[in-house]
Amino acid sequence: MHEGIAPLAELYRKCFRQPGQPLKIGIRNDVIAWHPELQPGLIASALRTYTRSVGYLKTLKAGAVRIDLEGNPVGTVTAADEADAERKIAKAARRAAAKAIEDRKGKSATVADLPSDLVAATPQPIAPAGPPRLGLAGLKAAAQARRARLVAAK
Image (cartoon, rainbow, N blue to C red):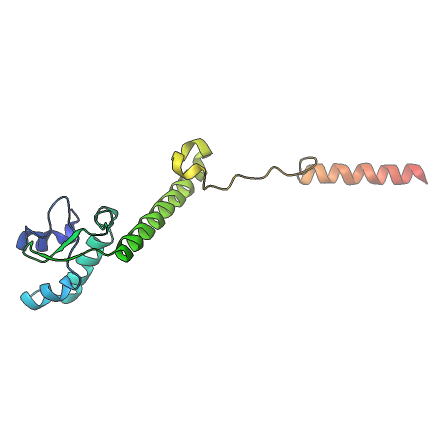
């Protein structure tokens, strides 16, 4: 469990347990109302981190029961909530794949290094048409050869 949520997990063991359960909409306001001694910004930050984690997002399935601070059912997850969670999970997966590719650039990453479910979505490089491109030395040699042909033709 995330360290920022630990104080809330101590206060509300039935709410913040492993595996998590979908939380009541507006639970932040409940915590702030019950604990005015806690800083509202820290509460909001801890809950934001908890509810944006992939583990929590995976609990958001349409029809799943939402719970309050004491673990009592107070509502259900809607299909729109589930679709939004799936979108966020996919975005997190794309971000993680991009970071892995970026981290491996110095290590000559290949498509084989990627997870198989992302290989299909990864655009493959297109081989250039025609002869390979010349470096600076090759360009200089080609220019000298061209000049030599022009001089010989005169």
